[in-house]
Image 1 (cartoon, rainbow, N blue to C red):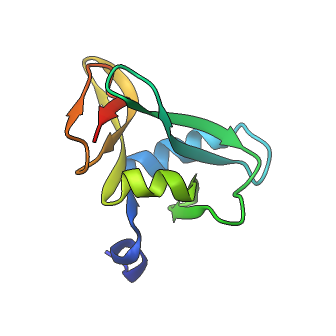
Image 2 (tube, rainbow, N blue to C red; image 1 turned 135 degrees about the vertical axis):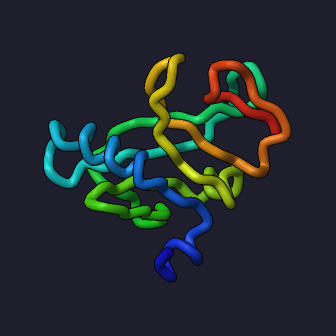
Amino acid sequence: MSETDVLSPVALSSSAARRVKKVLSSEAPGAVLRVAVDGGGCSGFQYAFTIVDGPAPDDLVLERDGATVVIDPMSIDYMRGSEIDFVDDLIGQSFKIHNPNATASCGCGTSFAL
């Protein structure tokens, strides 16, 4: 684990990095995946995943294996200590956030409570 991985408030797994890189390969150069926390969902908060042209000046920028993910400062507060992962199991393929701050979540895997 590099010093950057240790100091970053959010981690990006190698599986997630591979998937992000694959998704972004068909986008315009400089495109990144934005992960955000929005109000809503069945548990109070939900994760949002969007492709944007590039990072905002105050975004946390996570880079791993050629993939770039950005997170806005407000979302970082809700995601501190989390790992963004990509899973492929019997239910299907999806990004999954392992968030130690979540006290509850719903079956969809994108909604959580603090």
